[in-house]
Image (cartoon, rainbow, N blue to C red; front, side, top):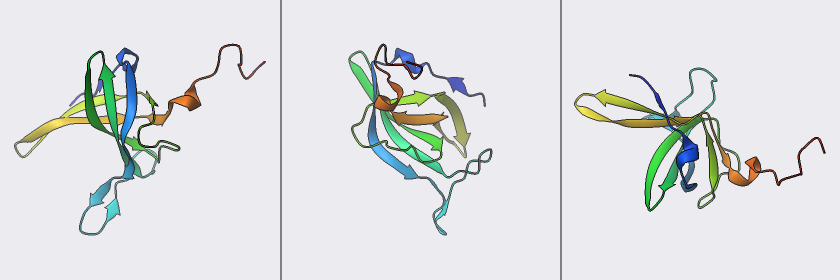
Length: 116
């Protein structure tokens, strides 16, 4: 199925609701899920997506550990996509991002650019 891009600029806030944890591929062996393209361990982060007066918590997968992301922290999300899925009568939407980082790491005060 096709992945649908999500414009995160439309949200009034994105906060870490559940800290990053590695995803398990095989519960019996404890083997962790690995990203096919990068070979990095896949982590899952619960994000509270806020828009106006509503908020939803979704689990978002990301390749590699999101460094510095902690519970209750505002975060920036790059390349968030939603992919509908169906398997043996069950269905849902899987969310994936290229990167999740603390919002403070992505904000540069006005007039304080790296080249100045």
